Image (spheres, rainbow, N blue to C red):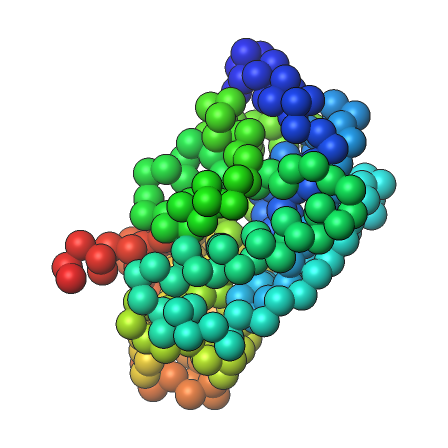
Amino acid sequence: MTNQKIDILQKKLQALKPYAIAYSGGNDSTFLAAISKHFSMDFCLIHCISEFTIPGDTQRGRTFAREHDIPYQEITLSVLGTVEIVTNNKDRCYYCKKAVFKKIQEYAYRSGFQNVVDAGNVSDTSDYRPGRKALIELGIHSPLLEAGFTKEDIIQGLQHLKIPYSKASNSCLATRIPYGTGITQDILDTIQRAEEFIISLGFDGVRVRYHFPVARIEVMKQDMPRIVDPEIRNKIVAFCKKLGFLYVTIDLEGFTSGNLNRMLDHE
């Protein structure tokens, strides 16, 4: 992260205020919130809770906002009633992002904020991101992307500001479900319970990919030796089988963000 990027970001945020940050509770939007606070900008955080939201992200967001005295609002949106989302085709993220950010935008405008910004960055452009099209259509601003910030820059920024961060970027629960598999509340609950259990054993950056009746578990590469320890492995297998999985596997490649997008190359 360079001083030039910081200067560019500050100027872009200055031009957008008063603005609302679409706040997920993850590393990227937390950095955008923290740097906005550091710059003394006129802004607030809006956290949209849907069936795809990870409860841990919501709790971290509430704690961060409270500890740093940042205006924070939560809104709710049900996405399981939208056919284009629950059928889970490759454009699911477009329809979901459109619904979520439209709701955030409406709330922000009613609350007196002129712009809505998201925490998209340069690193996001290397993967399939249909939701980006929805943000452009709605006129959502991405100042981190425009200033040239990468996820590495963001981690460095959080370290500099002494803000706790996750070792792995997070994403919504729907990203655990292969394209073409319909999304239901039961599936989302199963994934959430499995991930929460594994995280409770001391793991970070956990993904439970839903290939029913197979659970494909991803953890950080450095955690691979620990997850195959017999005591921990047996606990995870037993818990996942209680959830209905017949087979419980560990992905030897380790945690890889967005790896279900590889399936698009084989359509």
